[in-house]
Amino acid sequence: MLDYVTDKPDSHRVQDEKRQGEAFAPFANDPNAYRKRFYIESYGCQMNFADSEIVASILNKEGFGATRNVEEADLIFINTCSIREKAEQTVRKRLTEFRKLKEQKKGMLVGVLGCMAERLKSKFLEEEKLVDIVVGPDAYRTLPGLVEEAEGGQKAVNVLLSREETYADIAPVRLDSNGVSAFVSIMRGCNNMCSFCVVPFTRGRERSRDAESIVHECRELFNNGYREVTLLGQNVDSYYYQAPSSPQGEAVTFANLLEIVALISPLLRVRFSTSHPKDITDEVLHTMAKYENICKYIHLPVQSGSTRVLQLMNRTYTREWYMAKVNRIREIIPDCGISSDIIAGFCTEEEQDHKDTLDVMEYSKYDFSYMFFYSERPGTLAQKRYKDDVPENVKKRRLQEIVEVQNRLSLLSNKNDIGKIFKVLIEGDSKRNEKEWKGRNSQNKVIVFPKENYELKKGDFVEVKVDDCTQATLLGKIIGR
Ligand code: SAM
Ligand code: SF4
Image (cartoon, rainbow, N blue to C red; front, side, top):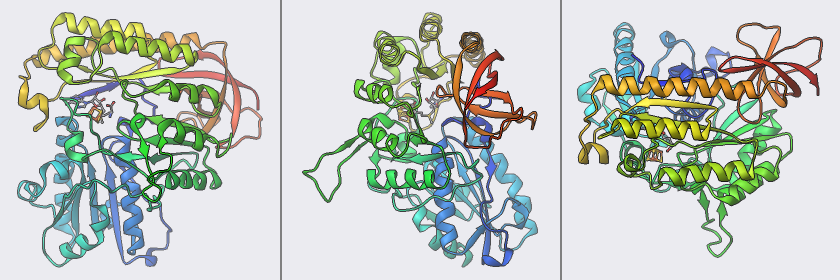
């Protein structure tokens, strides 16, 4: 049973449910080049996928090569998510499958990384007897040492959270990349304490990464042919970096960072995710409006449309405040795409609160949304303070109603694009037909169009006129370069 729904199956945003469980194999084919092989599988938000690229880099330096084939691995890593109970169940189920492999292959080690490792700590070793290594999101530098310990027959755990670690100096190994778009972590952790959310407990305090290292990474990506970077963080708008070497010097805000990255090249598109509505400033909106290559798209999770529920969620804004923010975005960036995350059936939610959520959706005219029903998480403020009192069947019915509204809004939004011309970045062949390209416009909508006789390749920009659509995809024709 699904506990989340997305109306946009082809998205590659932060919470990309389509990529769940993806395994990677980015290295050279020479099987003798490495002393051991590792297999890594990632779940959860895009931050986890980006972390797996850091883990791959750390392991690679120590002589471990990646494999896509779990059966030939000496080390199996699973980078886990705790955001909802279902996410943890998926990981536990996957671990039972690894048990069989471990029984067949002597010496094979299994490591659990990420949020679930952080949440359960050494309890994991007791609960899941087959696990040898447990590593939290801030302790990946210690992985090689932990692997060595585990090879010596001991169970190895490091779940220390850090106030400083940003892995700024580690060049991520791009895993299973399309070679066109890449994710760049700009900060870690979260200080927001939304009452439903486990992230502040599993990923620790918010810290911003050295601005120079971010710009360096983006520039390298551009030089290597990438044409789009997505700056990643749980709350990117609170990015703030003050170099320790010049404490009197000017600090870099998120608006500054966006501008510096945008200036690398007009041919490099810049995206970001996620924005907390309370933190996105006019300065950020004006910077977006100023640079053509900063994509006109904001993921602005509302969570609920009821002021009373928002207060219980500790989101720090009211429904009116949120709607005013949507107005401001449309005022400064009239063609901006807006998407959302929505939770159905949070504690004490009444029918009227739910109607308020549907109403805010209609008002905001989201292009797409990620929609969930509330899943109580141990240790969160909501779990300690409120009763999870909305019956499951009611949560599901409300989620269904939210999905229906979103489906209608998505189709409407796409229909409004028919006849428009968009600059599209080509990401590769369309999944269904190799005679068609798949790309994205600035608003993050997927566009599929015939290749015809144009000499084009992945990473090229092209002008496409939309002539049809489905709920999830725009369809069009090339009209020029
Ligand atoms: N930091 C981001 C933000 O605040 O928008 C995203 C954090 S989280 C990884 C992604 C989404 O999961 C949240 O926006 C929220 O809608 C959903 N979520 C978090 N905790 C949840 C819970 N306990 N039950 C259901 N959905 C949850
Ligand atoms: Fe969780 Fe709220 Fe932080 Fe997002 S902003 S990660 S929902 S606590």
